[in-house]
Amino acid sequence: MVVVNIAKDEQTEKATPRKREESRKDGKVLKSKEFNTLMSFAAFFICVVFLAKKGVMIFLTMMQTGLEMIKMEAGPKEIFIKLTIIGAPAFFSVWILVTGLTFIGYVMQTGFLFSPKVIQPKFSNINPANYFKNIFNLKKSGFELFKNLAMFGVMGAVTYNVFVTSETKIQGALFSTWVDSISIFDNMMTEFVIKIGIVFVLLGILDYFYQKYEYEQSLKMKKQEVKDENKDQQGNPEVKNQQRMARRRIMEKQVKQIVQDAQMVIVNPTHYAIVVRYKKKKGDSVPRVTLKGIDEKALIIKEIAKENKIPIVENKMLARKIYAEIKEDDYISEEMYEVIGKILAKLVRENKTKIDTI
Image (cartoon, rainbow, N blue to C red):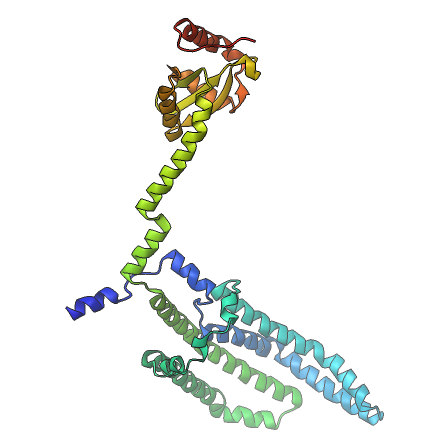
């Protein structure tokens, strides 16, 4: 019996679109730290592979310029300004590249998200109980530990493979010219960065799918929560019925005032209802369409017309034509004069309606 109650309380249902939207507004989105690290490393890779030689040349230029200015007895301020002019463009280029790729990595995961709720102070953020709960979350901590150990282990193996086993290359670089030494170390760094990059890509993919799994688990809902949400969105049937009845009463009151003042109602016979008034004392030079309705509104018009003994004329084609072509409170068009006139004349002869005269 206890097991059944626990099962009912479990979060087994996938998150609804509404739950996902609320979670996003709270700043809770799918994020992988390793994916952002991967994007930062991509910037570092570009710098090493494509800009390393240029960076070394800029560094050597700065050293040479500094030594020449010292020989010319230039002041510290002048030397600083000159070296800044030489090195600043390269520094800011690297900074923009790293920052830009990191930002792109963030946007790729979360989109352009700004949630004011994230920066609002919350007691839960400083609650020691939550802090220790996160520390002793064995599942989460275990994965992070495995990930970090794997990362350091593989990085150590790659470092050993590239540098320790390249003792001959390093010794050759120490006894070579500046240009040859730079070329040797540049090749070694490129090899190192490529191999480390492969490791980061694999770890980034692994972490992304793990974080996605954890994120989906955290969003899961209880069956009762899903039912309550559906009830909120679709509305309580009783409340919806009360609202519909209230709207109907308002509509009936508005329709009644217009229908009571009409000469006839033209129907098709079920879906369309057209209220026609022709009273010269009220300025009607020709018959006027005072109200139109379809479906429920048409039924209300017919009910009120019957209650007030307003003649109901069934003419399917005419009802549809008037509904499509004539706006409410507009006169009928000239092409309808004859057919409307004949209908009104017949109703007057049968004493079913009256047309006042001035």
